[in-house]
Image (cartoon, rainbow, N blue to C red; front, side, top):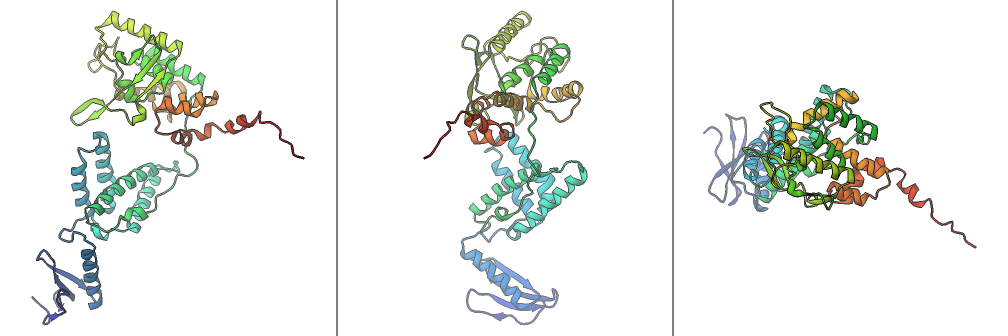
Length: 392
């Protein structure tokens, strides 16, 4: 050991000495676990400040026996949460960590991470997206918000484990969307053009898309739909499950939220359509109450066997490609069938509460937040017959 003779402080406060090899002061204390802990500084006061911070955190009950870089902590946190969230959610967390959080913040010590570092990381990610997508004024903001939400949850767990005193992400600044996010609603003519294209050129996918426009069901809900879920006499569909990615493959999942498990009334036309579809299935393949409603009836393609189920993954790219051909626009996705159903109902004057129930949103506020731009005349319509009040 190089340096001057150690100077002892009062019991529990450690010792200090000058280290010529490090060219800085060293203050040492012994932790309750019996470990010798060193703190450094070019000035003796700095070394003592670092020691004092350690002792304060120790007094708060923080676990000072372990020290993580953020990347190591997140790796452990992801492993702990692997079985407590849906597999798709877990893979999204992993993607956010590996692609965005770790490259910008992973090397930072967990206890030294602060809100300004997080804010600077989000700003850098935002700039990277703006460079990659110069025409998109909101480029990267959704990704950053997802990263912020995950990091906040992970660091909240660290607070609970007494690894850190406060959650620095709570004070980080996140970029805001510029303007109002546009909700694309196809009009009746556009929907007819899309449906006609599917009926003529993609007949196996036509029922999937038709019922999507009729009900606003999610991809996964449609993919999981069985004949037992459809009451043709009562003209209703009962949404009970979803179909999506699980660890090791695909399968049934619970609906997205408790409100997602719902019953949807069908129009006469939709009921007739499903009745005829079931008959066509009976003529082409074995059908039971457990059979999926949307199946391949014409295809002999190896990945689309006769009687095979049409899954959410099947429909995503096919729908987008079809819309590009028919409507010559590349900003419409399958989820816009849901927006279109809701938008048409609201523009018809249907009460937002009914729309919320059909969509399976957790609250009417969610529905109003998403579709508020589509209902600018609702207030005007509500007061048009309000009585003319006079006063004396």
